[in-house]
Length: 388
Image 1 (tube, rainbow, N blue to C red):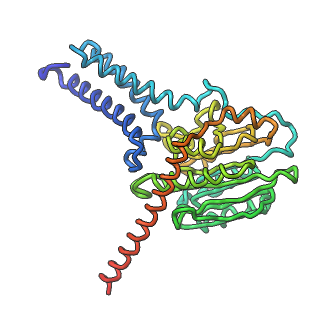
Image 2 (cartoon, helix red, strand yellow):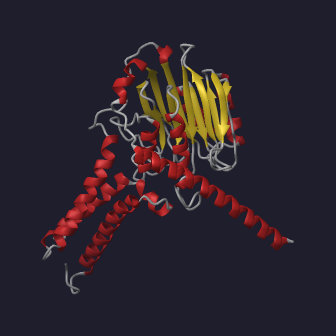
Image 3 (cartoon, rainbow, N blue to C red):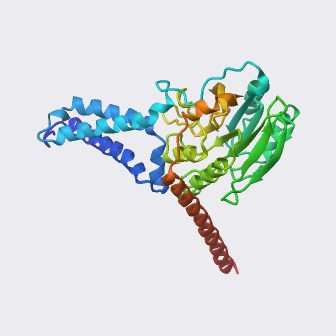
C-alpha cells in the first residue's frame, strides 16, 4: 500500500478501489443470509452489474500492485474478488446461451397448438399509450396482460377488445391494476387478492386454437422489496409460492406470467420453480432484461413467463420501448405433451426442505399482512383522535 506522502491521486485510487472491493464482497454475501429485509434482497438483482464492477476492481487492483502486498493481504483480497466474479457468474450462467435450453424449441408448424402471450408493465404515470398500443397491435399476441393500469389506461387500451374480446380487468390507481385481453376463449376467469388487499392477480383457464385443449393461466404482479413499496420480500415470496403450491396440486398444462418483481436467479424464483414444477424459457436463451428500460447499465429480468413441461418455445423476445421503465416481453409457445417426460428431466426438483421452506414463507406472508392491517387500523384510529 502507498505511504501517506504518496501523490493524492494514488491515495484516492487505492481508497476507491478498496471501497468498491468491499462493496462487491458485501453485495455478494448479504443475499446468502436468506433474510427478507429489502436492503438485503435488493442485492439479488444486480448480479451482472456486480460482476462488471468487480472485474474493473480486479484490473485496478492489479495496476496498483495489490498482488505484491506483503503477507496474505494482497493474495487474500485478489482471491476474494475472484471468488465474487466466479460465484456471480455461476448464478448468471443459466441465462446465457452457453448452457442447454431448459425448455426445448418448438417442432410444430400447425398453429392450432400454439399460444402467444405478451406482458407489459406500462408504468401507470406513463402517458405514451399510443406507443404501447402500437407495439401490442404489431406483435398481436393471443393473450395480453398490462399491469400498473388505471382507468385512464383501461380507456386507452380498449381498442384491443376489438381483436381480443375475452377480457378480465381490474384497473386500479395504486400502480397494481391489471388489464387482461384474450382472443382465445376463457373459462372461470377470476381476479384474486391472494395476500395484499390491494394487489390483484389473474387466474383463469384458456382454450387453445384447436378448440379442445385447456391451459391453466396465472398473471402475477406482487409488490417488490423496496422502501416505498414493501419493507421486506415476505409477501412477494409468499404470493409466488402460494401459486406454486396450487400448480403442484394440479396435473394440467400451466403458464405463469407477469412482472414478478424478482429476478430469475434469486433463491425465491428457484424455489418457486421447484415447488411448481414449472420451467424457465430464458434458460439457455439469454437474459432478455426488461427493467430498467431507461438505463442500459442497470438492467435485469423482472418480467417472466414460466411454463409446464408440456410446452416448447417457438419465439421469445423483448419488445420495443413503450415509454415505461419496463420493456414488454413476448413469447410464443407450442403445446407438445408427447415430449413432457423428456422435458421434465430438465426441470428443477423439490425436496422435503423446499416444501417446508415454502410453507414457512407462506405462513410468514399471511402473518405480515395481518400485522400491516392492524397497524393501518391503529394509525387510522390515532389520526381520528387527532382531528376530533
